[in-house]
Image 1: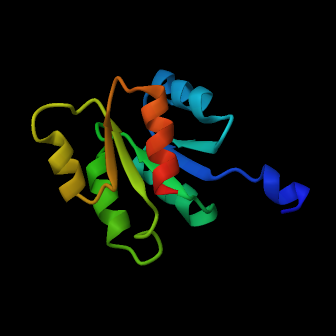
Image 2 (image 1 turned 180 degrees about the horizontal axis):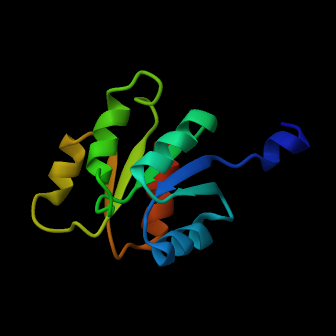
Length: 127
């Protein structure tokens, strides 16, 4: 592996409309990953058209017309994006919420507040 290849980090799209939550995740992941933030479903779709991502972290409770679960369904039914792993990173932590996210197409699920090491481990496992 040459020097340039060794510095390329996996690209992660984090769909999150809460600035504090987005900044926290970027701070946790920036050592090992390049994280791009999308604040809405629409912004996420625009970023996906212009950039290549290795994984998507998806907040579910977005304050817009569509929520994260809607976007997961749309991406998993699209040939261009269906193979990108998606982790639902959400405050939805009630009984059966994990099952709902997984049934909706998420490849994994993490409830907020989350454990930093668990988040990194799940990302690395899916990459």
